[in-house]
Image (cartoon, rainbow, N blue to C red; front, side, top):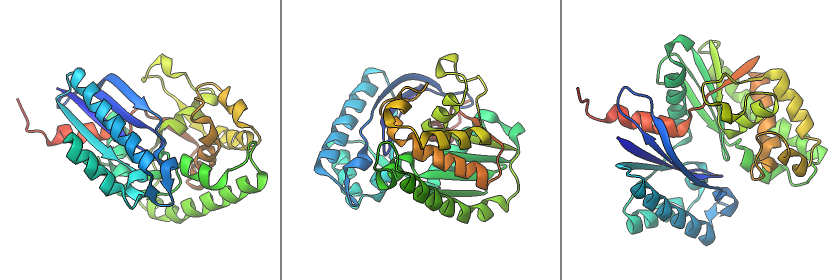
Length: 310
């Protein structure tokens, strides 16, 4: 069946159309997205009228695209920007009422769990104990486990966009701001090391998300044009090196790096600081990049819940 997943994230709102069936690999058929940057429309913890209007418009547009592409089901969900807005539910209810579509607000833990499921299905049981990291616009998700349901799953407010807005206001970066951000990030991640590692060391450490993909690319990994089945790694040495280099690099120079979009360049330093901290504090020599993440996890879980048809 043809399914659509509408991901309302802190940076991007993305409709991904997939052809999927039970027991098979979901195949992407069409992608429609825009950098709405909803988190930048938060006035304190309140989503602005302009942000709400733009979100409503894009959801309406996405539903029309889904209909045009023959989608049978659309599964829409929102993450940290909507989750943390005091009027987030009000905004979504207006969209539900006007457009007759349900939008689920995922908890941070659910984000981690569904991303973990996608990674498990991609790499399979031969990975044994998986440890998965995902840096989004608003949050960092960490999960570990030997099954499809993780033993532990946590979400921290360490997204690349959030940290950039709160800590990195100068271009080129101010060394004192970088140092303060690094200290804060490491303190928050260090508090989670014990609860995660008590389940055992990972046999396979994996990263998902645009931030990790871009860091791996600028460190020498194959470009996306070579397809999803090329093995891509980010080493601890490369993460540290690029965190240091990006801290001295203005945004214009980051935009010239391979695989880095103009829109993502401003927050790449914050993402690198988080990636460096994760790999150091969890003693991970290398992370393998997984092409599947939260959107695929949502589709896979939905397929699991469908009645089995022989």
